[in-house]
Amino acid sequence: MNSEIVARLERSLGGLPGRDESEIEPPFFRHIEMTFRRDLSDQETNLIRLFRRLSQRQRDALTELLSG
Figure 1 (cartoon, helix red, strand yellow):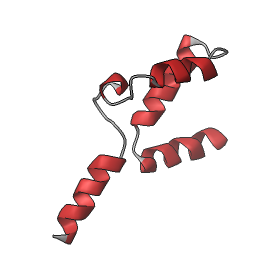
Figure 2 (cartoon, helix red, strand yellow):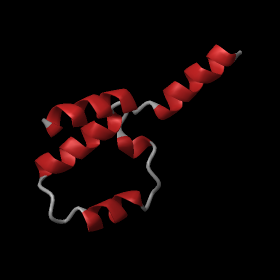
Figure 3 (cartoon, one colour):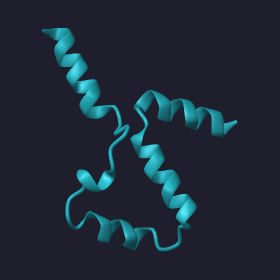
Figure 4 (spheres, helix red, strand yellow):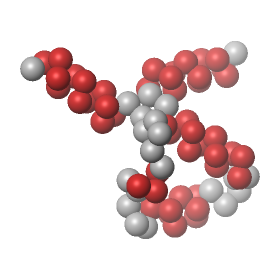
């Protein structure tokens, strides 16, 4: 049972591979996001979306790589 709990938590909290953010975001979320992202280019916005789909381990590895 413990392994099933861990597996479900990892799936729930481990990023969103293969899913579109619009499937899970609240209806007003896109408006709020656009308000805060006015200065971001399309490329920067795409990077944020891709980053959010990564698992925490992948995020940590990418951050470490980019930090130099």
